[in-house]
Length: 58
Image (cartoon, rainbow, N blue to C red; front, side):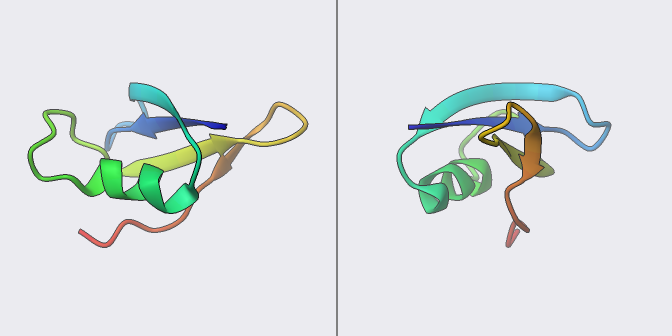
């Protein structure tokens, strides 16, 4: 499992979670029924640093 964090437009963390697949984390961020306004997704790298997880489609 990989740890992800989801940030809003101001860079504040609005949610965190663990996902087995990278695509599942991005899909969670893009879910229109979710209350959180996610603008960026990051994952925890092997050295304990946060890394950009990729562009959102929406």
